[in-house]
Image 1 (cartoon, rainbow over the protein chains, first blue to last red):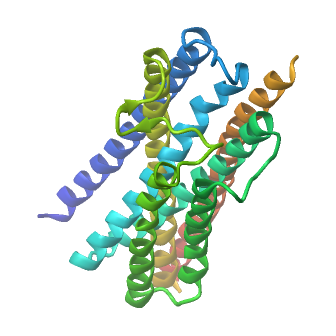
Image 2: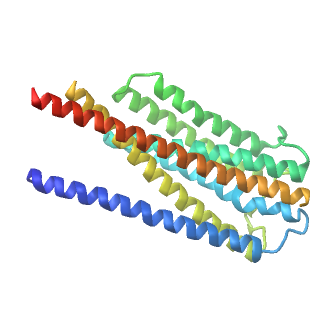
Image 3: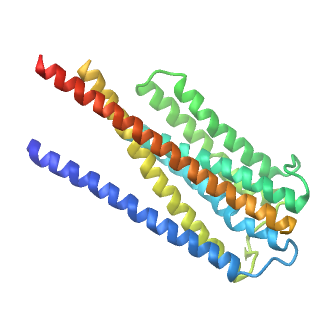
Length: 240
Length: 50
């Protein structure tokens, strides 16, 4: 392949990336606005919790998106270990970065909901909350591990192994509420199906699709930024 | 505004605030990258010029 065609394809690829990110941003906005409109104007108010249950339509999608980001991060880490392709390191790191942001938002929105529903910001008695906190702290520590070693294959391998270990906590955290039979934290999806009316289920599903699309948009923007950063660093070293 | 409404508003504002903060961080990053690129372009021109 000639230099010219490589450049041409490279530019076309970058323009394609930007178009995909723009399309994702538009889709995320539409889905989130639509989902929240359904949540506020179509889904009924919860008989027990009343209006405060509306937090559910952002809290649950944010939490599920955090899990999805950590799973993507672990999947990219697995691809790195399998192929030794360095681009997966940056992709895994970016997905975990997104997961930690969504994880923090889960804890904050959950705390606000807990305060209005249970009368306390946090309770150590709920296993699902504690396990989610452990998962969040585990992935927050990923950055400390990553930046405690010099850039290179060793750091990439260590980070990938750490990302893979964390993913084990996801099914434990997700299933904890079902196994533990908790009193306070509600269980939405049971082995008998969804534990809420169809209107609420559709509304939360649209919000979840919107949140996932938002995460995909942010992931692409963040990844592009990190790639530009890496290219500039390389260019600086070449010019030095 | 009832207590429930206040808490629901707060939760949604947290999400909106996070998005705006992220937008601000990205805007600052783009500005920094633009500056770095300009510096590198200048360094490359100087190197080529002698």
